[in-house]
Image (spheres, helix red, strand yellow):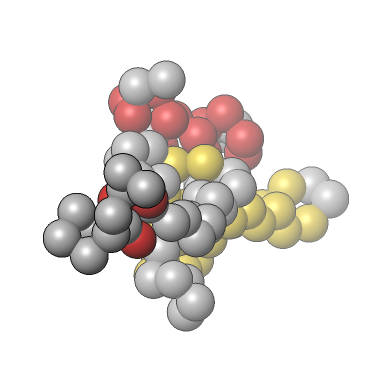
Length: 90
């Protein structure tokens, strides 16, 4: 999916709808404390009350309603066995 397909504006329109009578407002915009990921809290008034949603920016530049996955720890074999310090021939 292209980043333009999941821009913040297009996702707000998709999830909250575009109603001129009830404008959508960005209530908060910043970085998460844990991993400094960009987020936006967007809200609009509905007949049933206030509706708010969080949107999170991903590494591809697009926005989603779920936060990006945390990078899991990884280990590379090359980092463990350097040619000058390891006899790989037995």
